[in-house]
Image (cartoon, rainbow, N blue to C red; front, side):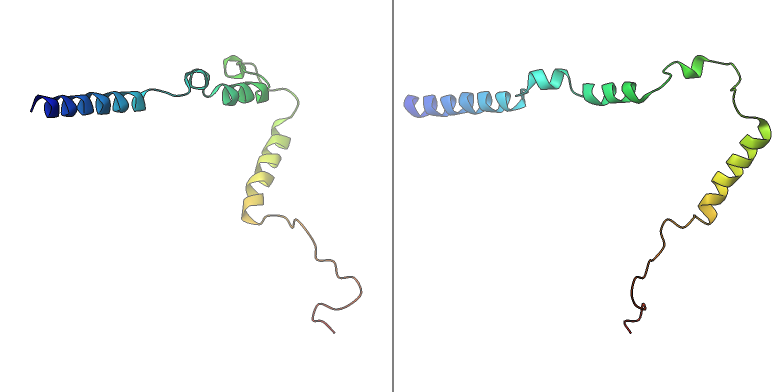
Length: 96
């Protein structure tokens, strides 16, 4: 009876130890730097990181030109421009 109780107890301890190690991270070095590549790429692609703090007016374009550019931009979603033309070389489109 004692031998059977010992086996059950040993099995429970080993199962508990196996479950506890399953929760542990197997890649602590990689986990410590998770997301660094994304943050680094975002910083490299940001031209002026402190732009929100700059309250100076934008230079280089007047109001009328800016309004026209904005209107053309909005209209491009209503009727997008053609991106390609079908070029037929040496025959008709219906196969004749």
